[in-house]
Length: 403
Ligand code: NAD
Image 1: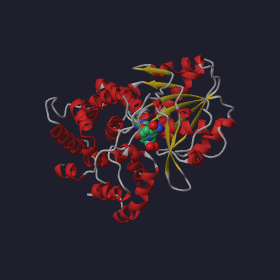
Image 2: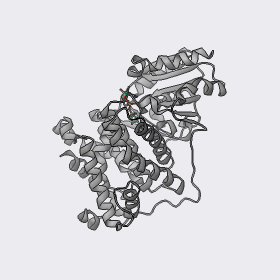
Image 3: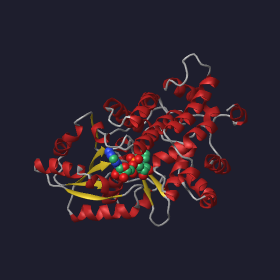
């Protein structure tokens, strides 16, 4: 830690905003039972035939059917497209677009984790705009918003229900693409923690660490602003306390409720402040080695925090204090050190593997490091990091986490 503090270059200036451009969904329903309000929300938005976008698991366990029945019972027609896949691909999106047009739909309801929600966002993108998903890869703008989209998350989580982002993997170029724009913001977010009670331990840990990463990265981002700071600090405080409880006691309703709310708050924070280096480096690991998104974030978070900390020590110290890892009276350096140590320890508690112990091929991993570093930089996220890395520094960070 001390070594990192000495060798780090001076901090880059945070972007000074005259005003912050804040976007959140115009309708949000939060709390137990919100799930049953989907039909009323669709009616209030004049939807007559939504397409429910979900994945095979949520279709198979009966949740998609329950939602469909609720909607049909109110006289609104709807169909289910269950072709969303983890780390959604352009092929899956294209199938969803075909289903949308074949059923003469006028709106979308996404049900699931970040993958079905992002798939629905991309379907909406192509319903309203010409071309393919890859034509809208960051920094390309999205001209037109898609149809009404009611997002119902079942993980806690990506926060995608409140973000202006979608992450879609290009089935041809093998790139995990970031798509961004206010046009992707859902019309409504239905945040019902009861839908997360079925999450197994690993999914709880991974999605929860994804939320923690959103909160920390939003707070230290060069695009942070006073509005997003409030959401980020509140989210990281809750996640730090509740995630181990939800991990060890899957039926703990209070921990599940805290995690669900915090995931949404963290989503609001990063959507309006951006993520940074962890996310930039995480997407290529996810795509090339099929590591779940939250897990690849977890593999990176302690090491990347250690790398970045000296360039925004006061901000990282705030995180440590908000999370209760450091005392309010701790000096900045001590607070930052405790944060880094705490993140490494938390990974042990949540049984986060390294890329090596996850079973990734060593030869393939090291062969792909230059490509992953190039893709990470091209995503734009590292440029929001308090310490802006060079390509070779990113390559070294990939080597550092291999273990
Ligand atoms: P996911 O949607 O990929 O789901 C992972 C698995 O968990 C699936 O098999 C799913 O069926 C299952 N699952 C979902 N809910 C469950 C529940 N309640 N109980 C049991 N199983 C359940 O996982 P995710 O982590 O939520 O989403 C990851 C995706 O989101 C990645 O593609 C990532 O890049 C993206 N993402 C998007 C944003 C954004 O702002 N758009 C932000 C972060 C991540």
